[in-house]
Every structure is written in C-alpha cells, then in structure tokens.
Image 1 (tube, rainbow, N blue to C red):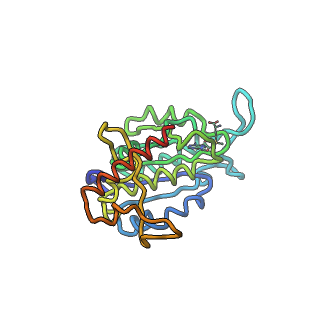
Image 2: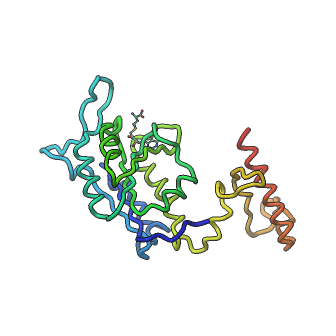
Length: 241
Ligand code: SAM
C-alpha cells in the first residue's frame, strides 16, 4: 500500500549542526528520488543562523543541571527560512527521545504531507519554547518524535530513519509498489492485527545443508499464500513473548 498522489512535490528540510551527517540522503533510492524530481531535500547548517564570533548555538540550562541547551533564536531563523521555501502548511518534526514513538502508521501519515521540517537536536536538546512557538503558528503542526526508547547523541540518525521510511512510500520511489503491500508492519492478519513478514528464500534451493521449504517450490500459489500467512503469524507471536 503506497500513499495517494500528492498535490505538489513533497519537500523535506533538515536542520542540524552536523549537516555532513545527512550525506546518505544523496545515496540509493532516496538520492534517486531527488534526481528523478519526485521529492526535494534541503539540509541547513544551524550555525549559519547563529550570531557572534563563535556562532554559538547553545547555552547553560535555566534551573541548573548538567549539559547545554540549544538556544531558540538560531532554530527559529532556520525554521522560518525553511518554511519560506515551500508554500502551504508545514510539519515541524522535533526529534527527541521524549517524543511519540515512530512507527509504520506514522510513516504512512507523514508520507501524505507536502512539507516536513526536521529539527535535529544535540546536547540536552532544544529550548522548549521552539516547540511552543511553532505550535501557536497556524501554518505549522509540531510533532515531537522519538525513534525508540534509547538516547542518541543527536537527532540526525533519527531524521535519516524517519526520512527513509517515509520517502519509500511516496509513489514512484520504489519501482514495484506491490512490494510495499506484503512488508512487516503493513501486513494484517485475520484478526486485523499487524504482522511482520514471513521468511524469504532465494536460490540455491539447498545451501549448507539447509533446504528451502518445499511448499515454496511447489508452484501452488494458494498453498504458498497460506504458508506465508501462517509464518507471519508465528513470527509475530514469537516477538510478543
Ligand atoms: N536530554 C535529552 C533527554 O533526556 O530527553 C536527550 C538529549 S540527546 C543527548 C540529544 C538529541 O538527540 C535530542 O535533542 C534529539 O534531537 C536526539 N535524540 C536522542 N535520542 C533520540 C531518540 N530516541 N529519538 C529521536 N531523537 C533522539
């Protein structure tokens, strides 16, 4: 299941103090999607929006405590510039381990949006007034998103994870869109529960003493579909233990 066709070309802006971290966006299917004009990606260096000799983007936390907090003004300048580059409404994604946990359902939802701006935090994170300020702007929706219950040094890796999972759902990015239908977290079982994919095999039919399940060589499509559905259920149940 891909997503419906969009009104205009989706655009993704990423803001970070380490723009080099986003270099993988030029590779593979995501890179090709840009070359083919299906999507646009912009990466901004937060320091370009900082002032002063040292282009400082952080300061000590009010209330005390360890670490530094990212100052709001450079973020607002960078976000405003990103927003000015695309007409319409903007989804501001603030990456934080304190956010809502990312999943395939969220990927499908975000893949229908025309403009996503990713704020990659560092240090102890971004002054919370950035979240509050943009939540008050009528043309912005703010989402705080986490990619899992662990703490990274920065949001760049999280942005890469989310971007890759969204962009592959955009029509035309994956050559054969049918391959999206039978994937883990898109498959649903008889009870409408989300399933992971069945195990896959390729040639040779025997490898290091291990044979491919004979049903897959039978040519009986009904039997193969039933076997795969059963395997998906078994694998999903194993994960729940
Ligand atoms: N002090 C923060 C806390 O305890 O919630 C953690 C800050 S973390 C060291 C620095 C930055 O990494 C965050 O601002 C965020 O952008 C990013 N980050 C860390 N873990 C993340 C996760 N699980 N999901 C998304 N972003 C994460």
